[in-house]
Length: 421
Length: 154
Image 1 (cartoon, rainbow over the protein chains, first blue to last red):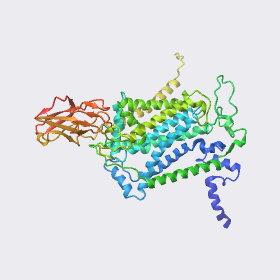
Image 2: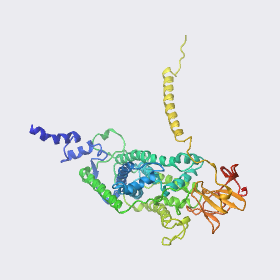
Image 3: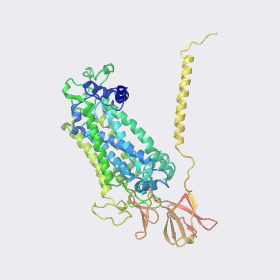
Image 4: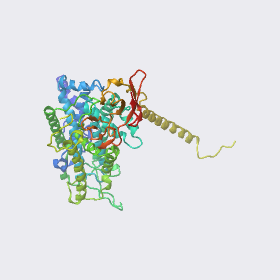
């Protein structure tokens, strides 16, 4: 009788996990392969995957921020009603009437800003290590799409509180959309659900922000991770694919661990020298958990210290002066202030995105994959850095050098007119 | 009776019909969903409306915030000017000292006739047809754009 009761905990464990805690190499393999959440990982990884300076974990950080955003977002949904007469008051409720409401809201806002920044830095890292080369070109394209989704999620998100920023940003963005050639008016009608910015626009932003965009983003994240696996993990110079013009020589046996010989094509390589590899459990997973804790702690700290902004309630009669988008869109706002909304706000940004997507297909050099700032890529790195600096420069001009009526001010100059201080 | 010897069998024909029906249904559902996204009835304010009586308004430029227009009244003339910047839709402010409209978003400026004098705005501010309703109140019709010289004399 007693034996039966003593066995219950381990029986419960076994019924869930099907194996005991990994204490040897076989179990370390089994826990990765048999677990639905863990089996995206390979059982064995290269040791240099664990080096922090290889990637700084920027992609992982972006993913963690996405998780934090999803969780805080769901919590916020219990108090936020997407109606023009309610939304703004709900924001005040969260600040004053809901326990930890302001902290959750802050976490959501700062994680959003953080994710935009981290995704951008992750993109820069992938570029500077030439990790987009064959066979990873399409994963780069997926990454660019994920970046755009991140920006769209941010946009639809800050439209929700229905404060002055929300209302006027919707107005301006809808006009930029409306300036698209040929189909502009139809696109604008679709975006705001009518001809003026009002309740329809709010509910459409809400559905996009809470359902459609996260759903698409989730699927693409899964595909993005899956492709990392299929492409053999992080890019390394030793296993870089050097295209053979005649293609007569078969690629060296890229054996995986087990059945993959059945499938033709390039598979992750298990190196002939076992010293280069180590097990995912526990080394990689440990680093992943530590990073998650770090990201969460930093986000909580920021949320306790800094409050997310909220302007006055939306007022269709008064445009705030100046009316500035959040920092990641100020570059586009600066651009748009120079002239026609179509060329500046639609054409040039789309051209930038198309060029970004084409990078892996335009890059013809073959050295430096997986290595930071390889000397043979000096031209590529300088070109990319130039564009990145211009992009950041536009943001800086928009943030600190534009005052009321979008006039130029030095950052230290006081604004003498306008209705915002 | 001779059976026609053809490569195109009854089975192929039925398969063709079947696939056409299936794909056609899915295409129809997609087109329907896309059409669904464009509302047919909008609960938005009317594009033509009555405002106050002529003597309700002082001389000069008066901003009507609920309608987003400027009522411009000098002497006996009454005109209605759009208060939506033609660049990206912000509300310009009338600055009396400089006798011009200044948009806070990107610095577009319009003179008293609504003509663009600075900034990225591509078109002048439109003037709307303004008439006198039988009730004695001013009637603004935003669907009719008129030139600056056509105002109401009342």
